[in-house]
Length: 166
Image 1 (tube, rainbow, N blue to C red):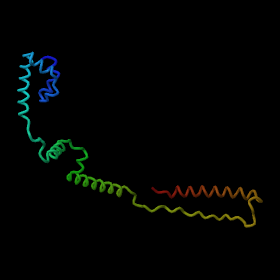
Image 2 (image 1 turned 90 degrees about the vertical axis):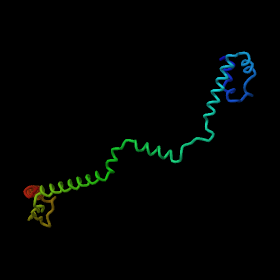
Image 3 (image 1 turned 90 degrees about the horizontal axis):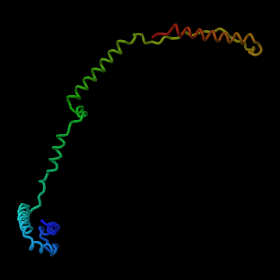
Image 4 (image 1 turned 30 degrees about the vertical axis):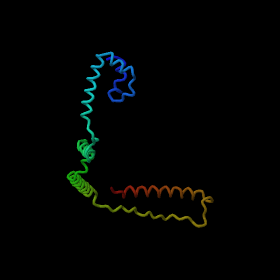
């Protein structure tokens, strides 16, 4: 097939003869090979047109919904979907309750029986400062008072250590 025929072949087969140039028709008259091939292409185009449906072809109602349902059925299940199954939920609840009972039993049996805190004995002091004496006026009195306070602190620490219970 020659170039002038190739360039305008689609317009001619569509049936729009107005857009086909005069050179196209002149070449068909002069070239028998191109005319024969064009007749074969016309018969083939007519056969293809006869297969075309007159009414618009579209999917039946509900087609897209059925396709989407089928796609969702074929999707792999998520690991989290296991938690939504009723049998797994019952098993998980039973296992959790068993764990709570076991931990409670362990805590009750391992605690010591005596839970009362030991009372620290009261330390009574008999030191008293005379109302008329001042710390500045009596240097030995201030020194003895500091040593008495240190002794009281030591005694309180010893009492705390002796009365400590686990």
